Image (cartoon, rainbow over all chains, first blue to last red; front, side, top):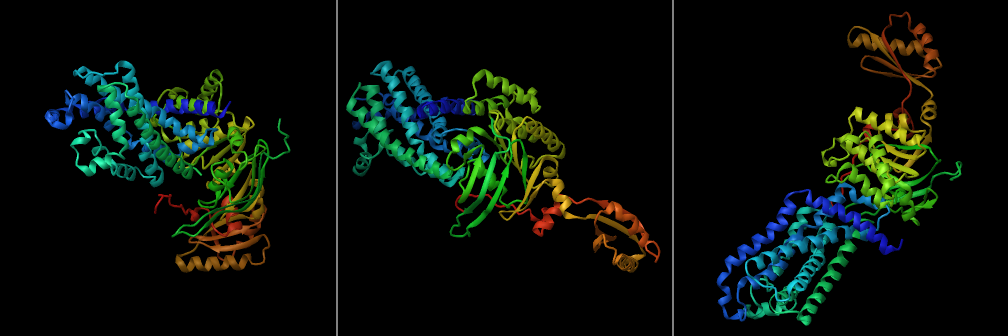
Length: 259
Length: 341
């Protein structure tokens, strides 16, 4: 069996275990549907009339504007505790048990990341479905919607490093939670809620380097404009850079923990 | 087929030094250990916590790299070919490591899949193992709902699902009640009867005595002595005879102890005499033969023997002889690593 096929085989069975562990706690499947719904509902009501401000030129409703931001925002929050799973396996000795079996280290991470991709896609799908139900339209139709789910999943996988790294370094759940909390301003300062034109100058400059904003903008054009490939490409680049940096750090921390 | 005379585990000059940090000195956990285990043998490490047992077993199971020395398991060097070794060994760790959100059956199937046991064969083996471990009826229940003993047995089953040539057991009955412990011992002997080579670490003397064909007494990272339990106990050379002495009050007891000391002086089989709160304890060579003569000598001079008990040497005595301490007194648990403290 080639190395890649081996990783695929191992990740498949480990991933199935991850999914089982997820849905057997009823709070999990309930919250991945409810959490995005509550987010979308609360914020759409809160900022209902904001579209009348001049910076929102061309936006018919705040809902259409808000949904893409909410997709990324929800994924951003949802992955912030993912490192705890690996930590639990580490502490219980289950990780050692996997390491005594003929299992590649990368398979163990893949067994967490593949289900995470699906989880993020489900949350994104929930928001899209509700938005459509409430009257918003997806300019790119079904292919665009699928691409949105893929972007959401890929972003979640890349961004999950912000939870894995502190978990693997501190080996402590609370520290993992509080450290990833420090990054929340990045989401709030993005274009999730207000267009960049309405931001103060310094924030506009900061947003040029905010990967979250690129991902949000890509989903936004898919939803309200069309397949604007340069903008989608920028998001892809942002996700790849995030993924290489954060998952690279995760791998390094994981190697250190398991050596 | 492996040649029966060739060792399945071969360890030479194994050393593990945990590097020190800002606040900690380096620790020489394993300090030059050499031993070998033959095919089908049940071999054990007996020693207190912190003696280097877990470190050694983790090196042999490829979870830890040694600082120096060589370890070959099932024909493969654990440092050079860890991936091959992993296919050939099973490891039941000190802490029960099971997926509590999976059923007993799912736990075994996951490990079997990772070991590439083909589907139909896997189902057959899982049924067999659940039956062997007395878990057949609860195989479909979440492992998190199992009792301590059931979790242990499931953990052991998961180390067997790929039919390993060597089974490593690190303190397999730690934390179990006496009844579950006896049940698990029976299961381990059954596994061994199927031809599996077993390597056990324990700090329970009774466990080592009951299970091991051969054992090494390990303390401070070194092997103090090695042999079969019977050999080791025979090596002590004397049995323990405890006498309860009649006598009025503390003065009476002291006088009786004095008399016993005087009367037995020069009687060759009595190697030593120790005063206790109720009488004396003697170390007597071949006590079964020597006791009548001991009693004859004590008869008269006002010494009244109110009670007598005799004990053959235990592994604790062997431990004391070779390390200068008793196992029980050495329960020095090491704190867990928090990462930053």
